[in-house]
Amino acid sequence: MKTSGTMRRTGSPWPARIATTILFTVALIWLIPLIWTVLMSVRPPDESLITLDKNGVTTINIFFGSRLSPENFQAAFAVVNWAQEYLTTLIFVFGVLAVQLVTITLAAYAFARMQFYGKGVLFGLILIQLMIPSSVLIIPNFATIHGLGLYDTKLALMLPYFGSAFGTFLLRQTFKQVPLDLEDAARIDGCNWFGILRHVYVPSSIPTLTAFALVSISAHWNEFLWPLMITQNDTNRPLTVGLGQLQRTSENGALYGQIAAGVLIVTATLLVLFMIFQRQFINSFLRSGLK
Amino acid sequence: MASTNAEIVTVSTVSASARGLRPWRLALPYLLILPTFLFIFTFTLWPTVSAVIQSTIKPGPTVHSPDKNVGLQNYLDLLDPETDIGQAFPRVLFNTLIFVGVTVPVSIVLAFTLALMLNRKMRAMGFFRFAFFYPVLMPLISAGSIFAFIYADNIGLANVVIHSFGFRTHPWLGDPFWTPIAVMIVALWKQTGFYMIIYLAALQTLPGDVYEAADLDGATVWHKIRRITIPLLSGTTLFVLVSAAANAFQMVDMLYALGEGVPNDKSNLLLYFIFQRFKNRTDIGYINAITVILLVILLTFTVFNLTFLERRTHYEN
Image (cartoon, rainbow over all chains, first blue to last red; front, side, top):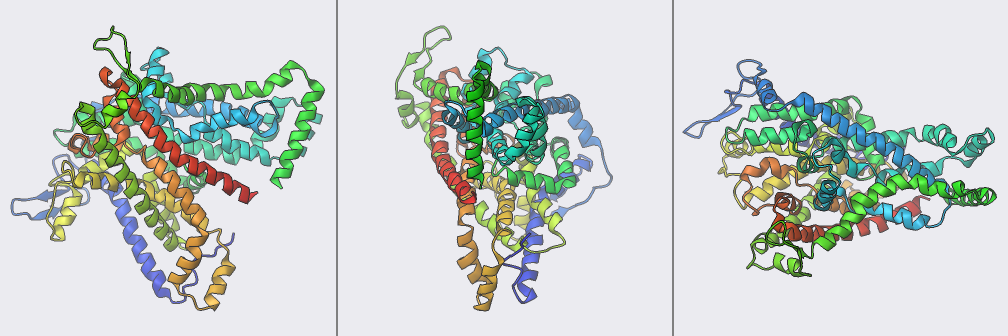
């Protein structure tokens, strides 16, 4: 890989040193919300991080307070059934992904390697979804789901995401790079279209499929307004909605420790995965352009 | 290279289907597309049309009375200060345009600057990538929850920092001036890392010899950034700019968590405004009209995006 870089050839080490200092400062500012959340979640609920007394003197008591306390987590668990909502999130996220992988693979193959009447028009119609994200269509989609009698079901959460223009487009580009010789060889070996798709196209597109999967999982894990609108029963609500509930129930008491615990419950999975598979996550988001 | 490949494909598949000509072979591509098309039709294409239709309707006074077709009246009402909705809507539209108009350029400039500083061999690279990118993977609602306690009046970090620097503290949430700023900070924190990563990747593809030539001419760092890096990255910038703008219109979840402090509609955003009113049966025409307005704005942005994308793929081929 060519690393050029404006900074690499700066001659004196001073600009580089200044840049590093600035970077560390900004990175620290960026990390403060996370650090703050962790600290607040594990300290006893009655010990606040900061106290501002009558004379306007601030005492900051960072770190863990007088002891490490599980109380905030216990309180958060008393309000919301996190295990249930975690399961719903998993079903939602992986249900969507499973269906998407099938739909985009089939459609991408047709658009990449088949010739048929109306191809351009159909592809254009599908690509409209790139321009109109379903988050903007919550009002008409709510009516559709209601009309189908699916309000407050897990299927209702997932349905708007089953077809993916973005995935179809991404995979079509990848399929087009697969050498035709491979397809011909498979055909001579007696493979039909499904065999070719399964043994030639899918195996050679694993990086694209992985990238799409990571982006899809992150997007739906974090979905909030749609699940909030379309579900009512706790068994159908994902983690993010649980956090919203927690937020609303503790508003008056301003139970920040409890909310901090909730934030960690909702975000921990993706953050830990990101720590482990940092490169894969970043490459996936890059590969997928903007989504 | 890729285009010649595509032509070969076309020729070979056409002849294959011509040879077969069985109905199954002809129907196959349509069957493969059917699931995707069906879902996208039901949840993207049809709802778009339906929003336009519904935006011309005024619901009757009771559930059983028939809806009235009022043409463009709902759109006019949105702008009419005499109506209930007309008092709120222009303000919310204005807020949204300010929100997008400020957060997008600021986060792009910040992202570009950070990427420039990061673009070299560094041992702490993993740390920086985590620090800047982790908010991208957080739900917006969590971001809202965290900032809700950072913005808290007395015990919130934001005011404590301001206080310790000797400035006057102010309520972040609930104040018509500070609330929009507070909301924008959440969006900046959340998105900047994403654009930074895109710039960083683009920077690494820039040709090194151009910089070497500039060094021989004795160019300064600032000169190289202004005369070489920024022009070479103009494509990336346009792409990021347009996509970020389209994205920003959808960033509203944090308002739910910051909600208690957000004064009614004074610092509300369009998509959240729609969400808040979706249960009022009488507002159905209005919120569909607002949906249509949002769709028009988004389409304008993304048509730019797609034409640009198209050009970029041409260059790559």
